[in-house]
Every structure is written in structure tokens, then in C-alpha cells.
Amino acid sequence: MKKRERGFTLVELLVVIAILGVLGGIAVPRVLGAVENARRNGNIANRTILQSAVER
Image 1 (cartoon, rainbow, N blue to C red):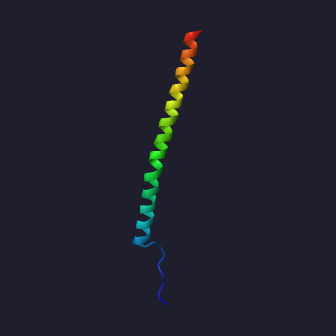
Image 2: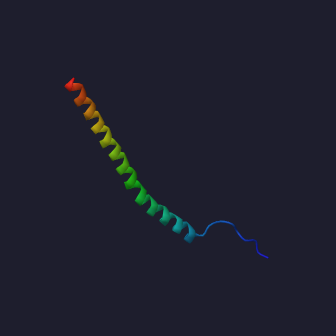
Image 3: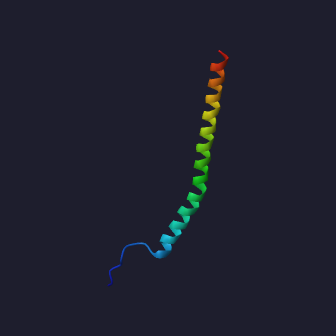
């Protein structure tokens, strides 16, 4: 009886790479959008603090 080799086939690896590519294509823009949103909210908070300080 022939010993079966362990490992992944090329097709299996390509499918996994394709799935990771799709997930990465979805996740990266969402993460970058969240970073931009946090930066914007920080700027708004800083502006509010500065306006409050100037009015005193």
C-alpha cells in the first residue's frame, strides 16, 4: 500500500488565497474609514475645547 502524503493541493491554496484577498478587500477600507472617522471626531473635540477656552 502506498503511503499517502500530507499537505495541501495547489487548488486548495489558491482558494484560500482568493478568500483572504476578498476579505482583505472588504476589511481594509472599513478600517481606514474608522481611522478617518476617529481623526475627524478628535478634531471636532479639540475645536470645541479651543472655542471654550477662547470664550473664557
